[in-house]
Length: 177
Image (tube, rainbow, N blue to C red):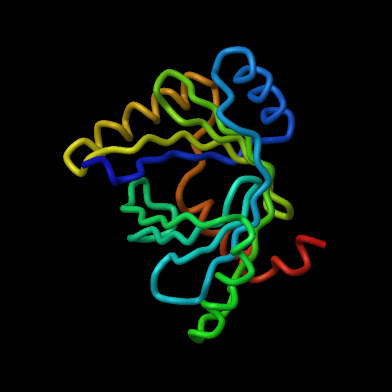
């Protein structure tokens, strides 16, 4: 069963973002262009709700944030249900810990999903991902790492993501203005 999301991501500059966007528009299949609002809740799990151009969803990723592979559980809803989902979690005693606002281009490139993100107050990110079984997750991660390196993108260490995430979590309300 392929329910393990294997991913690798890196921060990139605006110039790299524009160059990669041009490359993928020419060399890959555009799956979708999207605008996403994601709310992370303050709980022991990585629990989120999201509204995008197409739908709303609740999803939870097991494990720690920025791990290279994690089990993912996702439930999809109509786009109009987003406010009700937020009310539900607030009524259950959860608080919104962080809000993210991002423009995303999603491509299929050589059987890999590639996302190019521009996130308000956070920056530009490239993410390569693939769904995997538990048995193949390390092998798939190595393949994703090689593909990212083939794009001449420096791999951002997990510690740098952790540091920037903690800064954003503390300051997101002022960073998104």
